[in-house]
Length: 426
Image 1 (spheres, rainbow, N blue to C red):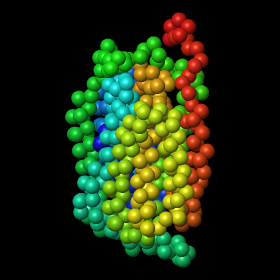
Image 2 (cartoon, rainbow, N blue to C red; image 1 turned 45 degrees about the horizontal axis):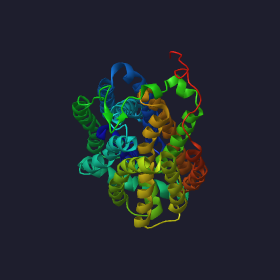
Image 3 (cartoon, rainbow, N blue to C red; image 1 turned 180 degrees about the horizontal axis):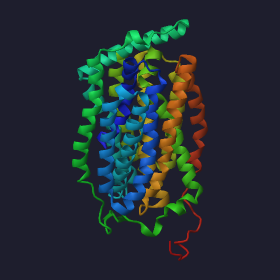
Image 4 (cartoon, rainbow, N blue to C red; image 1 turned 60 degrees about the horizontal axis):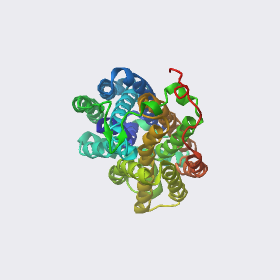
């Protein structure tokens, strides 16, 4: 999970891709948006296939695709431009991310039948920690350091040009060929490492035996499990889908352009912002375990309502803060809650629909993640390109989350009769 989780470190790479190729904010952002969309789609496909082929096979295929997407991005982006990055990193890599993610969650959550929140949060924490760990590694790479410095100059000059309505000459900020090559090699070598390390751990993945129990709780609650078709016939599925969509949309908006938003609010130099965010990203990982654990104690509904409510206050406050310490503190809270939404949702889904078809069922649920991955970055980058500022995107998100608080509070387990309960074979 650490390897595919590195997709969240793309927010540090995005500004560095602007200067070498003269791109706007929108062009590199779309690669991240597509990666998130196809991550959701890959989760749905992988969940369905895992029921037939096993979680280990899907995990192996997933990490291979994720690594391949990075390798191809490194080889061709300099020659073929943004569309190549979108197709390789966004589509190929995103599909692999989703498959590795759903295979891991499907396998591990069955080992914790009595503590599903903790079990799901524990494995998903690995995905969340992938970004800060990877970010700490790449910040020591000379090519990334050079590109980040050039990006700071490029972004500042472009912003000044837009503010004065002067013509911006991107060509004068072109990087040296060797710096561009080093930046592209970062994608290539990362992809190789993702495949090599990911496959080793994917081989160790396995599900518990059919008769496994923990403290009297069975791992396989076949008689309580909904098939995917049955699940799609319940309003609860769509309620959970919307809840995940709204939480991811809010988080993705501030994650996809974290460097730009923090720099705009604080005026601090980009390298300082990059270093700060690299440590803040740990909260994305820790939030998954913390909220998953807490949901076992206070219930999924209250946990998710708190996740929304805390973010309402955070987004209302964020646009009014201008010190790096204050902005970083609010970012930490938002990331904690963003990760928490992922930590609680697998247990929410298993509580409602059982574990027998969990891979396929939860795979469809995280298509909400994929859709939010398109909507969130597209919204914030459009606001930036049209207004020259990110701040205008924050207030609508706060209002959206305020409305969303009601959704987990009205959620409840499906109670309608099912074909399996009526003795009809499904």
